[in-house]
Image (tube, rainbow, N blue to C red; front, side, top):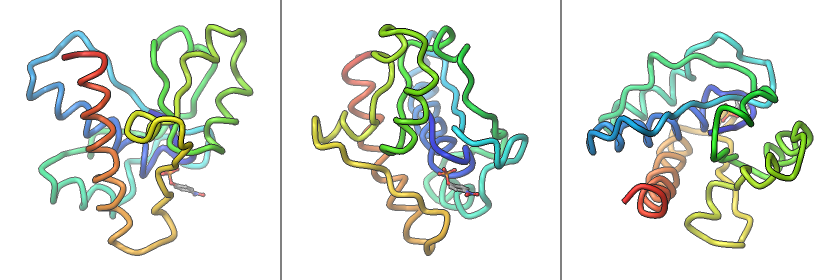
Length: 149
Ligand code: 4NP
């Protein structure tokens, strides 16, 4: 799961997916998240995102920001990006067509081919954080149905 800062959308995406996999007792899928920037490396998720997560019964307090790196293409089979800008940033690091094929806009799982984005809640109000969780809840349901069920 990849966004810009790795303190709002992508740790939440990781948290929602991890929460569902844990409930399914699935231990074979490895989840992680990263930012395309190095702005928040080593930081815990944004306090507002953590609080919204807790309201939804999800704990993301253990996650720490890190920057996406080329070796992530070797570590992961699927790389979900939150918006078009993250998509471009990750694609720029791709070394070959195999890398490129791994990168997907996460909301394309819910709205195929529409190119929709998970809005960045960082500069907005509280409601933006719940909206992000709702979108990621729908997207991770689709991912689980597609790849795991
Ligand atoms: P995220 O949100 O990409 O969802 O983690 C942001 C967090 C911080 C910044 C931008 C987006 N920032 O510019 O510091």
